[in-house]
Length: 172
Image (tube, rainbow, N blue to C red):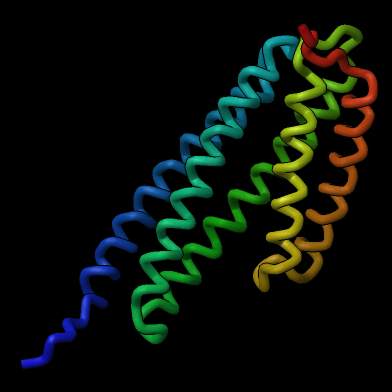
């Protein structure tokens, strides 16, 4: 009797269940993105952070799914990897689109809340990580990928402008 047991079926079931969960959570992200873009912009930074926190949770879930897929034989993962890449791409597009709209609007505020600089610096780092991932990802090639990279460059400029003008937290 072999000491090695093939866990491919078990890992596949786990990956399928996690992909289903990812799909459900994408609906929550879409709602949080819509919430971030509505209402009083002065309270929008809080709503935008809720959106970004959920995005971070989904990125962690994507990492877990990738781990499950890596534990399987490659021929058994092709369909699941394609589905995961589609979700990952949709998430990146959602983040870029929401960030552009939100920060272009937020930039127009005359008085920005304390901590805006730090929040925008954190967002700038996160968006740079997304751009690095886009540069590495095969599914972000072509015209849409180039458009997203151009949009990211634009939001980088907007964030830098906000950072330069925004108040930071008071140092004691």
